[in-house]
Image 1 (cartoon, one colour):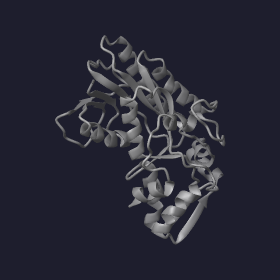
Image 2 (cartoon, rainbow, N blue to C red; image 1 turned 90 degrees about the vertical axis):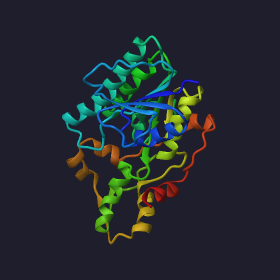
Image 3 (tube, one colour; image 1 turned 60 degrees about the vertical axis):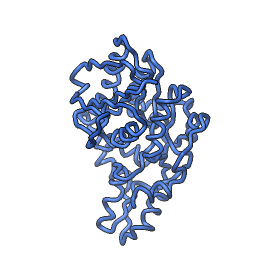
Image 4 (cartoon, rainbow, N blue to C red; image 1 turned 30 degrees about the horizontal axis):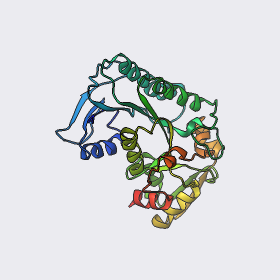
Length: 296
């Protein structure tokens, strides 16, 4: 069995949770990134690399998987500068990695890339992997992001990830920040559906994608349970007991975030049909358990 994993962008939140589990399973991990993950292990090597400004020459001999986790945060003001950064870090990185795989004499067993459920239409229901996609800006970005993976000459997996919940996840840190001031903040009405996946389950999805050849193509990495923003805040409020509860209207969020406000305030439903078909066992199927684990 091939025991090497090549990861691009492994120092981020997903990578810093995925790499330790790969090492535990006996894989040798090569992390190519601007920053190193805070972990020392004889099976882990780090190469400082900005794939956007260089053409990586990687030895893929005995490589079980290439994983691309590169992507600047999308929860920022969507001005032209930030949108260009969001686009380039995702699309250009996948294009260059895919090219490196195609040009390599020794191919990896598979190429896995992060992606997002933002590809689906706003306020759409029960999206599975075969559902139609949107033509709004972020959806077109996701399709460009995925294209180079799906065109690679090896088994390819695109993980359309929902909001990632877990200790120190960006989502949880953003939600908890107002509670330091005994305040709960709801964007928009709070009724919007918020698909989620716990980081432990997401790590397991990546490992299953490496080891199970039935994992191929587009896969929704999302918990089966639906939840609303209001319900998530209610769970936290029952623990943190804020004195003040504030709703921020969508028009005000648009002044701050521009079109990203639509992604915050509107719903997208997604369901993990392929994971269920492949008998994936979720550890966190309920939002309450996932949230409580993340904030305690």
